[in-house]
Amino acid sequence: MSLYYVQKLLYHLNRDPQVRRRFDEDFDGLLAEYDLSDEELTALRQPDIGLLYVMGVNGQILMHYAALRGYEWRAYIEAMREGERKYGPVRAGLYTRAESR
View 1: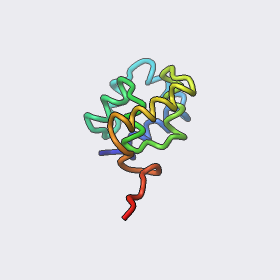
View 2: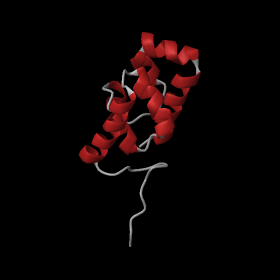
View 3: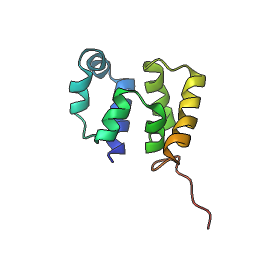
């Protein structure tokens, strides 16, 4: 999984007007510039906010992508919850949970 590149793409979408323009004009071409897995590409294209969250995408970055894709705040929060119900616990990144032993 290339969590780093997913987050890098989303960060650039949030910060760089040229990347944002590419998102509108040539989304597939933009995605091809990042080293993304098939699962990540699918989650970004759908968009599957819950899956992106479970993959480990930082919520601070993800909330801007969700808004860009038309999610209101409550729908964004519910998408993350649904992601955990559907795909299991967060796999990597800041929001992983330590297993109790």
